[in-house]
Image 1 (cartoon, helix red, strand yellow):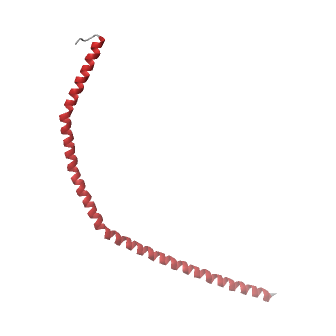
Image 2 (tube, one colour; image 1 turned 30 degrees about the vertical axis):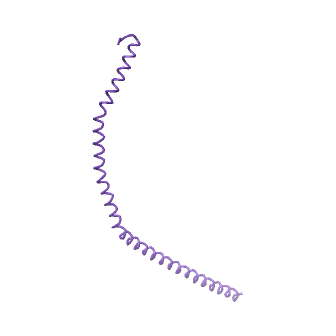
Image 3 (cartoon, one colour; image 1 turned 135 degrees about the vertical axis):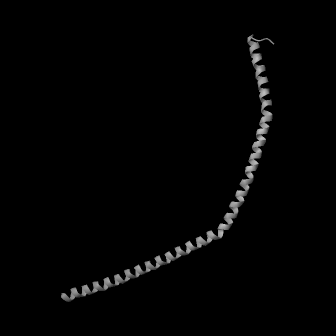
Length: 119
């Protein structure tokens, strides 16, 4: 019976040793994968920095182009505003005069129909 227990214990020790070796292999494999992933991340970070540095002059050129266009827009907007106000100053009195004459006639007609004012 002692030999049987010793045999079972020996088999358990062999099984546990194999299990420890398998788990150790898994840990080493996971560590290698993490290391590869870390290296990939570092490579991607470096690539992104070089891509930004490569595209930065193009972005600066486009921004300067937009600034130039916006500078031109300021002058055009001021000219359009000046033209609008000049037209308002010229046309608005005429429109108001016509409106006042029309309303004056309507008031006179209304008053005359009520018998208050005679033409």
